[in-house]
Length: 117
Ligand SMILES: [Zn+2]
Image 1 (cartoon, rainbow, N blue to C red):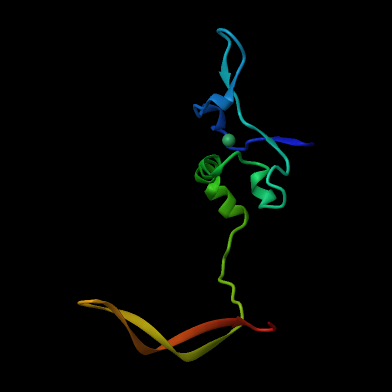
Image 2 (cartoon, rainbow, N blue to C red):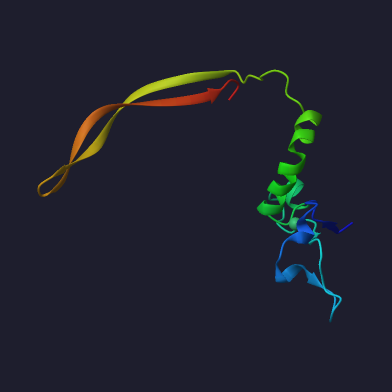
């Protein structure tokens, strides 16, 4: 299948010219047809099913509870890490009457490293 219909159940209620189909007095707003892979490898699991953010969030707002129940999280997960703190010389700028001047200070850089990296 090369196309999907947008999965927002209210997609066809949104007023845009691109949704208009039919002729004369028999015009309708129709659910948007989505070409599979239209953004290449960019987030295909979601953008093959929703025409845009608006439709995605309408869907999530309507079915969020069911999705959360289906993929429920009953306990937190943890990622083992090492936290590295280093001191280094940095500068802040202080405004003066004739511009600004660099004032050095000792800054701290915190880096999170995942174990096995
Ligand atoms: Zn849509």
